[in-house]
Length: 410
Image 1 (cartoon, rainbow, N blue to C red):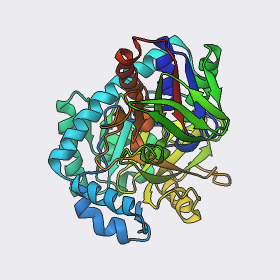
Image 2: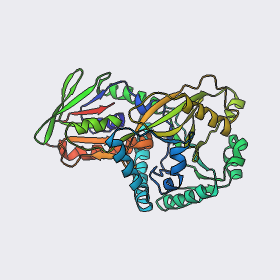
Image 3: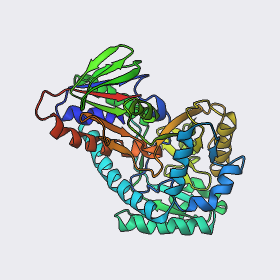
């Protein structure tokens, strides 16, 4: 999110500084699900959650896990999330996310036309599999809404899915139906971040990596500097794209950013060379809606990711969760192995209760401080469209004085 914003602002002529506590592509971008879901954006806050809630919260193998803590923010976020699990709210969120996703697709395509990226990008479509008639019926309703809003999607039988993705042949008897979106894409988010850093450095963008953002100094209606572990940084405007860390920085100024970490996991398998190896894994993106697990081919690798845990700022990798991803891969694509080295990973997605990101200035906040966070599991999908919104928000503000911007990400 921070690098996409830096790219867009540099194109507008701003002098940009990127401050990151680690390195480009760390955090939730390192090994995420890799899918670019421009047309299938169903928010997690959906009415179907109420029916699934007992199993999701109580079952040991549930893809959604809640570990209650003595944390008022966790409780408040959870209650707001449940309040958002209503049809009207879900429809409104879907509409807004689809518009932002369309803008993001256009902006990312423009970048890729302008500068070829080493990012394992593919546009092979996506199949979302549903385990039973009830979930498939709900999905068809969501599909109808998304088609009304411009998405091209189809409801398919298992046999029709196998015709599109032969690697699903062994799994066809285990799901009821699927929604197919032929225009969906995938790419390696980490490689995109690395490519963006190289591109931006070549255009004069300043990078302060392994640098912790400690505090924002406010005077009147403006932020005048950001204090970091490498010293103060002065700028005309500041963009906070710090993922789950955005809430802490906002709170230091008395501002509220309603993001909470949704912990997710992934494994990455090397695909055996040769036509036989490639045939064992999908070329089409696949999402198992029942298990809340996604599969995406990125180059010669298969990325498997999913799950959502509300466990606070816990980045530890659970062996149980990784084993569940391996088991799910065995079940859906039994010949995708070998599984000797699965490259386990865990990351924190910054999520808002409704699923809509926090973008721009906050009520009561400094006039030159913008936020770009809270995109949940759609961060990669929405990054470049969100950057367009931030750039549009800064143009009137910076017109009277010299360009200079610090984009903070972590």
